[in-house]
Length: 74
Image (cartoon, rainbow, N blue to C red; front, side, top):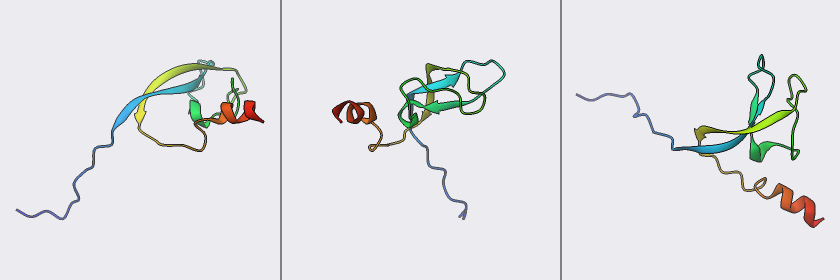
């Protein structure tokens, strides 16, 4: 039988470096390559964040991958 419903596309996932909030009551996190500082503070509660990993969908961000290399070159 024919169905008009589109087939679900499986998005590939990978282990990604992230920063997570160290405050137990806060569930804030961000990808490492989207952080503006070498050791960021939580944007919600202003507590230092800790480095970790999460299984997330693959995402290409070539403009920010070498952000620390660009800072040291200037």
